[in-house]
Image 1 (cartoon, helix red, strand yellow):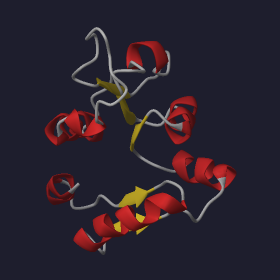
Image 2 (cartoon, rainbow, N blue to C red; image 1 turned 60 degrees about the horizontal axis):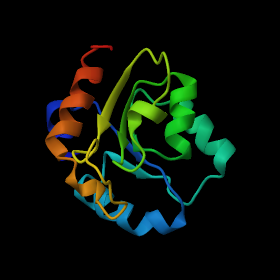
Image 3 (tube, rainbow, N blue to C red; image 1 turned 135 degrees about the vertical axis):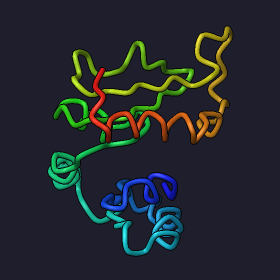
Image 4 (spheres, rainbow, N blue to C red; image 1 turned 45 degrees about the vertical axis):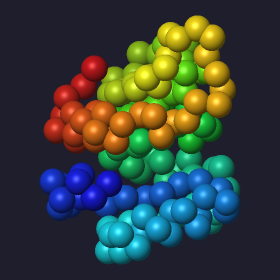
Length: 137
């Protein structure tokens, strides 16, 4: 987030999620207090969908808000766990999607215990930069 903020001074970040997400989101807000808004735990699903609809870029894992962003056609970076591969779950015919599979995707057997932290930050940043700079699928 800090590297994207440094490269794109106009960017602001909205952290979505439920109330349990809010404490971790506050740490992100502390790093960039003038550029991060914590919406986690403040909105119901309908209001969250309205907020997602106003975003220029969405970055998230395979959750309800990610599916909402996909349905709305919001430019998005979607991260998928190896137990639930994006090739099976990503939005179809999305005009501005950067799909990132977990590095263990395709391994047999796939363990649900694998961490999403295994996806390198640089990979997500690169995908976000492509979308921010107008590159589409």
